Length: 133
Ligand SMILES: [Zn+2]
Image (cartoon, rainbow, N blue to C red; front, side):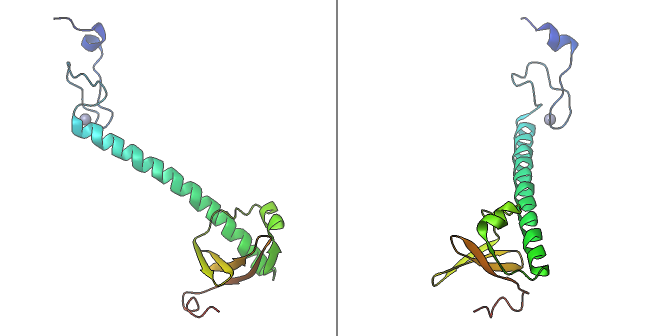
């Protein structure tokens, strides 16, 4: 029977639990199947967390821009100008088609969008959500 020198001299530790991996295990990253599964699950959730953070950052920037417009008394703006301000129209928190109107929201700020403009920018509260036109 032959051992690799490195197996003898350098104990290898499980990536998940840190236990020493028994010599002879063909998979030299984990001490057992459970640790391998847990490690891959954790990686998957970490990746999802990164995606969530990215989407939230974009939504928060969008909301900040809409919020600033409302404070300036602007409730209609052409899309090019809006995009120029850093707004990303691909990210919204809700969408609803009402007749010919396309209604979007970024958290509590709602607006309608045409191919060239966003208009009727308005902040809603939970109570007034129900009685939109
Ligand atoms: Zn382990």
